[in-house]
Image (cartoon, rainbow, N blue to C red; front, side, top):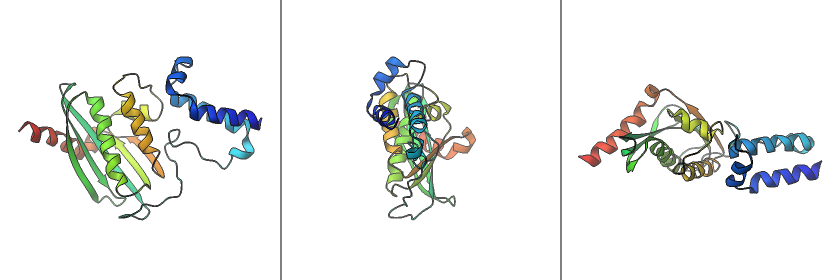
Length: 207
């Protein structure tokens, strides 16, 4: 049983997304990996009881690290939003990073050129994750008003569009670099600050 669990564990890590999509078309690659991890727990419970799931598989994963540099402990809250006028059209990214007390640490916008709204959403999130990493690799909670992006990251939706796949893969890689992460869907009115910054970036470029 232990040997079987080890084999499944290796396959879950090493098999490329393309292979998983080919054989399990009704599931996303991340969902397949989650199921494989569950099988490992069943086959080797004594070893896996104290282990933690991969950060892609759960809302939170804590490795016990603290923020380096400006912050020690606590959680960073990242609000990100992408805007595209025309979809595809002129696009921008906006981010607002708060500490756990609600103090805004970073507010930034970036003109993205021509892209779709979903591409802008991912690129805004990547911009925010890059800025968060400047504070260290501790705990982070991301807030997005794009239900599609949230569910793709949680493995509930497949990433079908070829333009989104590399953005999704880069996002997962960056998220896995933090000690813990959470991602949550919020209403648009809760994400006004990031939306404002994204649209301001477009306006400043056009003007």
